[in-house]
Length: 303
Image (tube, rainbow, N blue to C red; front, top):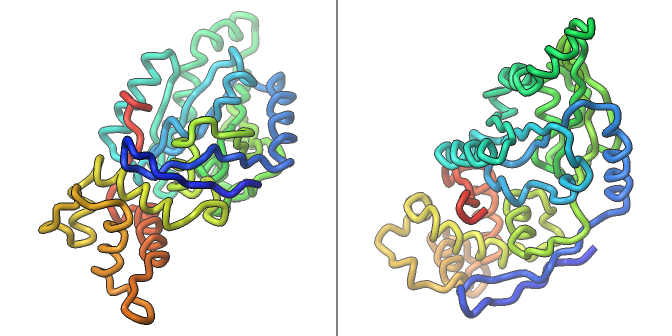
């Protein structure tokens, strides 16, 4: 497992990472399980993180799933910017993919899933009924990368706790069947990342949300990257949270901005030096806890 190596991009002023290569052996097996289980299902439900809708989609799945009908579930929508979530749903619709927004903690949107599946299969259901298969069960495979809330989605959907839901990547290892109602079954699969993040930005996006574990990245540099992104996309919430209203944050280097936040919060160590590691952890924790507000890091036009 490689640890990210970060370099400064002199063109953008941002810190960029070398390609991340994080592909534990169990994920190779998981890919094979998904591939072999496709013949058992009618459609695939892809759960993604509404805060990073592009980066949380596994590009390997397009090859594996091929022509199976697909429904995208933008989970954690209560943590994401609602306007941008609506834009992403429209974007997927324009490409022939049905998408819905849900939040597993609050249960928001969960009840829309079964009707959405049946709507996608409306023509197919008519064909089945014409052949005498009244009430035939639709079987849907649920896929997604680690830590997008796939297991929590299944638990809310099926009103059970059988799917293992833990806030750490890669906890689900096996395939399990669940019944949603008399005409809908779902197949859970392990969370799967892909062999290599060719686009270094994808690796960072996943690290911001915690889909890539913090112990394989440089926390300070990750937080600096996030601050530069927030300064660009959500400057007002950033300034409000860290009391930076009277400061020209656009003129600061990323490290200076991190130091400033540490100083504002009184994060000092011996000799009056600023504890930038603690400041970095705070920035990441507060983004992930939506303390900074509802934020979506990827836009449709550049996702």
